[in-house]
Image (cartoon, rainbow, N blue to C red; front, side, top):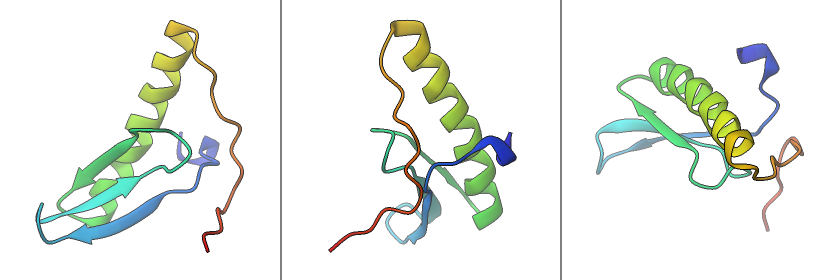
Length: 72
C-alpha cells in the first residue's frame, strides 16, 4: 500500500492532541494521528485508502496526486 501512495503527507506533532498528526492536503478531511511518527504514518496510509474507496463508492472525483505542494 505505501508504495502506491503518491499524495503529499504533512506530518507534525500536536501539543494539544499529544500525538503526531498526519494530513493529506489534496484529500479534504483526510487525516490520522498516532502516538509515534511511524504510527501516524501507518494510520494515514489506511485512511488514504479508505478515503479513495469511499469517494469511489459515492461517485466523487478522486484528485490526481500532484506531488509536492508549494505554499507562498
